[in-house]
Image (cartoon, rainbow, N blue to C red; front, side):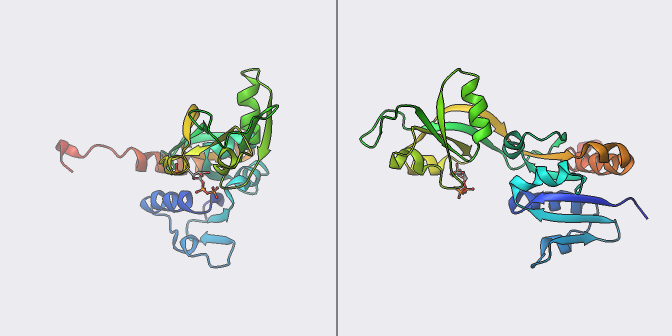
Length: 220
Ligand code: PRP
């Protein structure tokens, strides 16, 4: 029997795209794709266990070693700041972490004593403005962050921008780009030592799926 691996995946699109890659490697993700209310899903033949969790909880499971590996966005990793090994950029789930706001002050712009930032990423925001020596007040929100400047709660937001349509629909624009974001494969530090071979196998398999060898004679 192969060494057991536990993978913590961020529920939703990132998990679906991870299953696509794993299935091409021959891993059976049928149970994990249709979990119902079940929280632990298996490919028993391969001895791989999946847990599907909120994105922000993926680093927690992996740090504590109850999951050997995790797949989650770089934005979530930056915010969590956990001591994990980042093994691979999976190349999907691409977006940008940006500072956004009105291009010019508008009628709804409220002047605050301290520069106010609405965000789901307080730690990233704190570091970003600390590096610029700028005092800010962070207003932590858990969704619809764009409302911040629109309704006069904050001067700007720090949030992910994918298509840009939410910003456009609300008259906002990107003011600064903090970093590019995509899905990452992360690993528990101890697992990387104790399950080295098995993790190497999974990593190699994923890398092959992402960079398939060119077809012989240049044909498909
Ligand atoms: C995210 C993000 C932005 C939006 C960006 O929100 O917080 O609001 O997507 O995508 P876009 O550039 O393609 O418009 P999400 O859809 O996760 O919902 P939330 O606001 O409830 O967090």
